[in-house]
Length: 260
Image 1 (cartoon, helix red, strand yellow):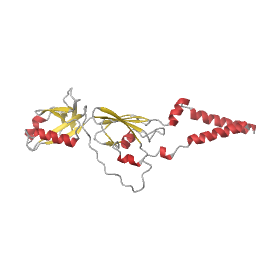
Image 2 (cartoon, one colour):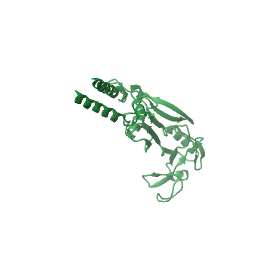
Image 3 (cartoon, one colour):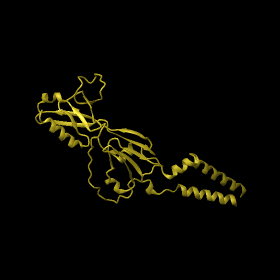
Image 4 (tube, helix red, strand yellow):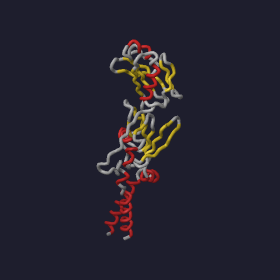
């Protein structure tokens, strides 16, 4: 009789520990049907250590030549970092944004664009070029745009992007999604703002997350998915605790049948 009670108690315990709230696992589960999201936009802000490809054009092509640093051929080797322009098979040098936010353009010299959006940076570069070129046209692209995802995801690591825009759900998806042990309601985002690290926790189970300033990630953001209580408790008891419980339950059930 005692064995039956113990077996029943273990089965009840397993049943309760296996029951997890739906809200803990479903992303953005509180979105009302038909709810319109707020209109949001995102434009990257140029930061120190960004590598930029800056292309300068003019209605008179010859006038812009001295403002563009190129290698002669794509096959040429160089010790400097380069990025390929796919249309003309030319290789443009990249400009490293220094700690103070400056780049050094040919002829123009040092220009501070760190802390500016790309639109603002383009306006500043074009303004500096107008004394040399009529109607300058400039393009700027960040070529080392990346974010990192760590913790309870299937494929933690660095995510390198060819675009300059990624959302937090997209980054989680590219990392193979969270494991069943990942906390969706307390995702840590570590971001550098004006040289200082900021730490923000985001609840991805809530509808208002869609309008959060952390919905879009910025370059070099670090996303950390922490484990839930089940994972933490399991690590204390050992990785095979579920197998042990199941084995004990099966053994007690067999003993109960034998002595019945």
